[in-house]
Image 1 (cartoon, rainbow, N blue to C red):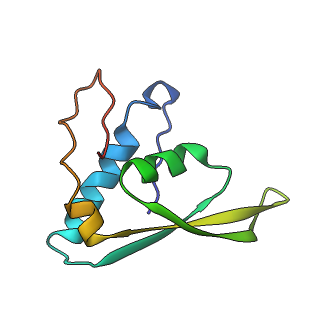
Image 2: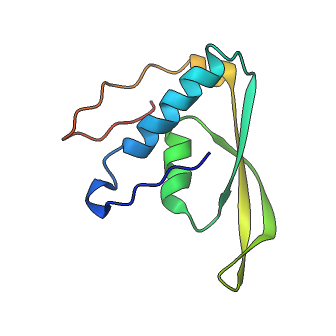
Length: 103
């Protein structure tokens, strides 16, 4: 899963979290998945926050697992179970002027 928001004016407005929520709703709903695991580079704090906002839990760290631009970086492993997602209240409807969230 990758989400790219290339217009810096649109960052921090909840679009990434909203996209993650839509994907999770489909994965745990019609697809009937039990668990989703993801890996995110440790320096990608914006993505980590978005995943945590949607219910993902840090499950571990793989040290120096990714070589990016000449430097080794850790991978953060995160996971989410169907019951954890389905027990969460539905997010508010997105308004262009208000940040969305996965709470």
